[in-house]
Length: 150
Image 1 (cartoon, rainbow, N blue to C red):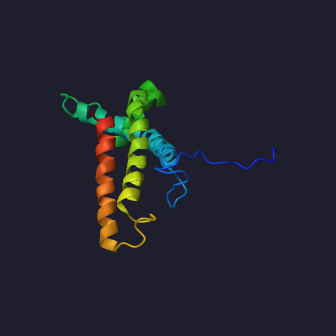
Image 2: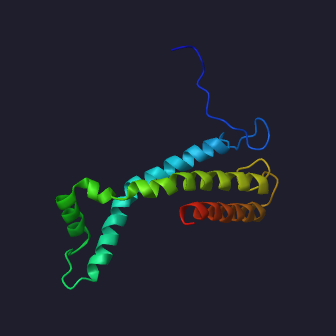
Image 3: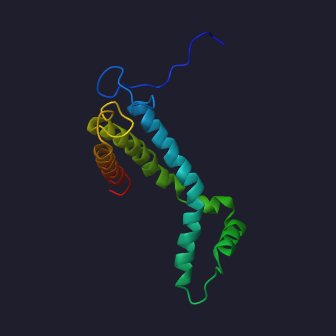
């Protein structure tokens, strides 16, 4: 141990020292969003692969797959586990920045509008903070979708 305290990655919101109630700033939310996006795709991409293959297979005269688990087994048997993740690097190129900006846009917008769990929202009614949260969600979705599906 070097005796130095571990300091979080911090970049102030708009002013020096401005952090959300969760202790994170924009960069912290971006890192959290990136990690969430990567985790989502690592766990869900195989399910998307099976679904896509089954949809394409259904239009064949003699479908190859008899069900989800049959399709999963045949893909792994013929292509290995890597077959379930074919194409995932391209998806990650959009997912990582998309989720990073989604999280930071949501928290930043919520902070500015006085949403729930923010300093600006402490004195607002529940309906006012709910509206701020919904607008923050809409703004974050626009940012995310603009990156992931341009």
